[in-house]
Length: 493
Image (cartoon, rainbow, N blue to C red; front, side):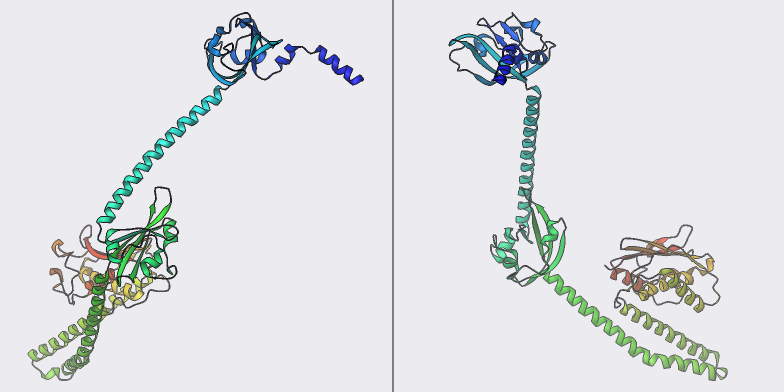
């Protein structure tokens, strides 16, 4: 057929050399004496040696190539072909490379007439494999070290938990108890392997406020729980705990606060009784006190002209002492009421409140020329009634003791998150350093206050308000003279 004839012509034109030159591998042929008789273009590209450089020479011309029986070509004990053998050679330009080669005989009429070798450069692959191996070894070493560290940390934690008298247990992500310390096992028995809600709280289903999901997300959760197995109340701190396998568990430490809760309840009851007593006594004393003051005033107004001076002085003293006692009763009632107010629905603006307090105080004390300044006061989420008591006491003291200085009273403060710090600063005579710790004590009046009226309850009320809001009160010396009263409060959440 015509097409077969054309193909035959093409095959006749095709030489073995043309075929070998198209192979994408380095390739050379040696005779029985290991001399190179053929060297293709890819072999030249890989090694840098041209056919002119190597043909007619033994293949040992390539430094690093195993020759003779060492390469296995003419070794009858090594079966052919050899596939995927690796060797390292130096190129013509001195660069060492790694080759992957295949070796076989050239046969004619069943006899060996030479050998053929094809090869490719796998240097980059070997380098990458070496890098991966080194990286894997380094990673394995790091994992070994970290595992040892975690084991050591776990051992220390275990020793610490076992030495604790507080209960401690660990719960896995699927709510199984996987550890209990000695103190807990001795109290309620070994519950390891059981669901935590069943083992610890005798519940048939998961606790309504189970903190596990929060803890697994990295949060620490604090709560109070009554343990049904012991009947006691515990403060429980739940925290994340990393396992050696990378999983996150929950560690819970339980402190028995049953006795503390009992004492707190007794204190609340006692405080309530004291508050009730103060209100009752204040009310019962006010009933007869008001007419005593009124009668003293009436006698002075109606019969004062006919009385001798000593009688008038006695009546005036009765009136003054009665008013002082009435003021004391009012202060005691205020002190008893502190803490009974609900938080405001909106934060309280301090500027208008301070203006009202200052105006009321100045109206009461006729003749004062003192002024007040403030700027950039924060809005505070604390009942306005309590804030009014704070500023009424602090600003009132500043007016009373520092009015002669004729320098303005300064009010200021700031807030960061829920922490509020407020101050009232005056330029009066100041408070001796030795009295600054006592000035907030109930009924205490400093040496500088003896010439002014007062009950010694106002600053005690300020401190009580601060304590109710997890804060404190203190006094510092104003630069240049005077007092700076400071109060720290924490807004309720």
